[in-house]
Image (cartoon, rainbow, N blue to C red; front, side, top):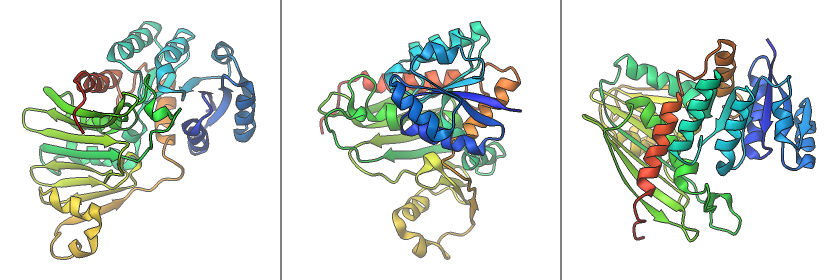
Length: 341
């Protein structure tokens, strides 16, 4: 069945989403919006979209649009999501869903009142490798989780006008840290307590941060930053085994299962010592290749299409309360004074 997407925004992530829709059966781009009509038209031509709009209300009134994907700067997400919901359009909002838990709550309340689907575009949750890892945990293949370790860091210099350092909506936690935080919630649920620290850039936003989520019998140690390129892997350590999503974990296509509860060996492998460790030192290691075409955004698009067709207002895999929880964690960490370098 044909499904028409309206794309709001024409930047890099919007272009990746448009390209990946070719791997989502039935999907097509019904319309695109940009504040610049010229950019909207160029995007429409490049991806053979139906219509180009310079006015958001016009796109939201287009009957050919079955759902809206919002891929604009972070500070615009909440208000544009609320406009889409008010227009009765199911909405997929690029991460972060909003810049505050209260705004995420407004989105959730509006979607519930309108009976309209809404979801944060935390696309990593929908990847085959991540779904496979979660299934292994659910089946008890590594025992109860006792620790999660994840880092996501890429160098971004602080240059004038950089979106990464914008005082409103910039910072490493909103751009990168939200991924490991969301996956920790995905595997372990809501934490009992949160601790962390952050380091300030010249613009005042966080250039790097460390977060710990504390549970009764587990801890998630997470970090992110623009000041370095990190290992960018994710480890889920259970009492009887360990899972590793190979770097970069946010678009993982390989899952490694170690039949022993030892997080050091996976970390050493990630650091390039796999040839040394691949023999007798790593018994019981099983690698699953879970490759896919494109950039991987098609899986979240397919999930939204299925949910909308079923009349759902939320995703079972990416519920809005977990988007709110992730934002609350970020807010709690950033509410503290920055740490000294």
